[in-house]
Image 1 (tube, rainbow, N blue to C red):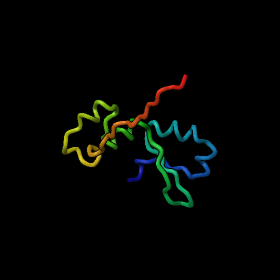
Image 2 (image 1 turned 90 degrees about the vertical axis):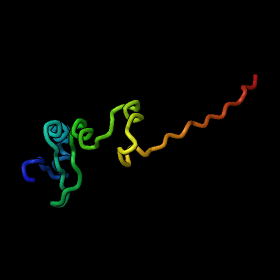
Image 3 (image 1 turned 60 degrees about the vertical axis):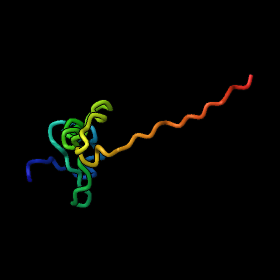
Length: 87
């Protein structure tokens, strides 16, 4: 899997986060701490593609029943208590 990621140390990331974000627009950037992978910074487009989740509520509500765990979320109606104002 070499070549799929750019890699930076946590210290490099802390020194130049904007540079890492810019690089992440073209390929994922793996951030390491003490030589071990810690987090990955990627573009939002890549995240959306990998997550497979819709971008908007209308598309979310149209997910088929067999779409997996992401489609099993239940939306509870808001409970709002209204009281008459004292004048």
